Length: 292
Ligand code: PEP
Ligand code: MG
Image (cartoon, rainbow, N blue to C red; front, side, top):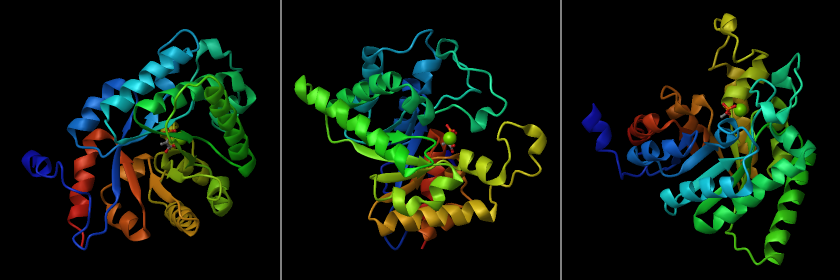
């Protein structure tokens, strides 16, 4: 079995009739890049930048972040590296953020909400990301979006950062900008959001939680948590269709993307990209390669 999978390294992720998708890996830190490369990931579809914040006892500086993002970009060569901006929440406590205790942390002060409320934190990260983009193929992705307003606000801040770098003659590359679709609100207005961004990446972990009103951390609800719930699958189709109508691409970076019992369905739905844990890259490729 291991040899069978190994034989798929270097092969395109394409069906027999020639329909191909991009197959990327999810990573949580620089330490995972080796596994992504070893399993022949075609890029990084989700780099959870939280680790930089979680492993420190202070806000990671621009230099600390720049050096981490640059390393990953360089290690991946010219391959795309999609870095997700800060996604901590009141449940992921980081002392130096001084977050209040909340009754409903999943519905609370988290992710892009913190970034827009405290732009100084966000700007430091964006500057580091743009600077690192001069050394590889970096894309920026923002989590937990619920409105067009938020996306426009993020774009304004990004434009400010680029203007600042221009004025300082600091180089940066062409950076694709995408958002995670992980709230039902984002799915329903995906047609409007698609006009604002270069790509969508569906976060099925949170999307399932918010759609089914089931806390993803509450083991007591396991019997109700149906990751194949038709509501979630229909939403994925809606997101893909809205993306394609505006000529942008859509992928999945939540756990569901690695569910090989759904690979055929995702490809049939028109998915453009799947981003999965490094160990699942080759099993998913095997599925796609086996399709007609
Ligand atoms: C998701 O919500 O599906 C996702 C990929 O993000 P995270 O699991 O980090 O919330
Ligand atoms: Mg999420």
